[in-house]
Length: 209
Ligand code: AP5
Ligand code: MG
Image 1: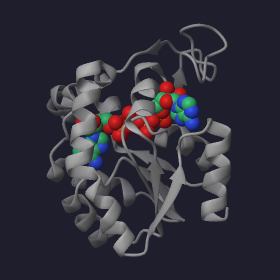
Image 2: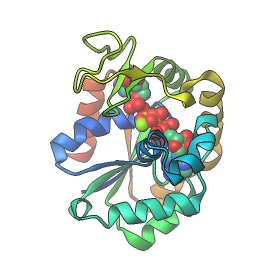
Image 3: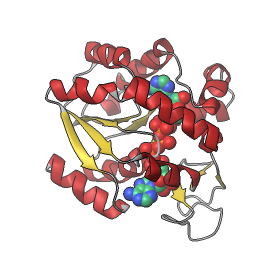
């Protein structure tokens, strides 16, 4: 199954994807996570995109499309994938059609107030990228990842100014993809407001998996 996860920042795309990969046995491909790894490793790509991402703006289409095209050509992505955070512009969606045929687009439905609450309390593992929340998804030990023992940190783009910018960018550049994919008959809506376990149930019902 070739899936795209679409939705505002903080909707829970990464959290649900981490659960869905176990269920569907397909790789989770997050462009944001690929960029963050590049930044942490100070690669040429990381150095190029760090400032843009910290400010909550979008990396240019050309760079992002090339990255995804390369990633989807790898053997593990042939039987399916969850693309999380790509496409984010109409140009990216059109480019994707040229190199892969997606089955469904899962639209995470959630109001801004919930997004802000989720992002301002998010903590991420420096080592494995697992997501936590200081109220909704606490690690067993404060500041330490349950899965790998790594240190938890707050993403630079989870500061209030960057959250606002990301929401603006989402509305202007990414939200038009909802209609774009609805018209193509590929869109399914998932109510992303409830707790994680219920969102998983909603997802399974909508996709019949
Ligand atoms: P990216 O990493 O994709 O960030 P994003 O879209 O802003 O989404 P987030 O990762 O912030 O949110 P999420 O929906 O995954 O939520 P999560 O599961 O963590 O992109 C980062 C940046 O990279 C972009 O701003 C851009 O600069 C660049 N970029 C990436 N892709 C690009 C592209 N295609 N083109 C150009 N630039 C690109 O959950 C959030 C919090 O809520 C967590 O703390 C979690 O524990 C909690 N939570 C999750 N679900 C629930 C729930 N049901 N109930 C309660 N709490 C919950
Ligand atoms: Mg994410």
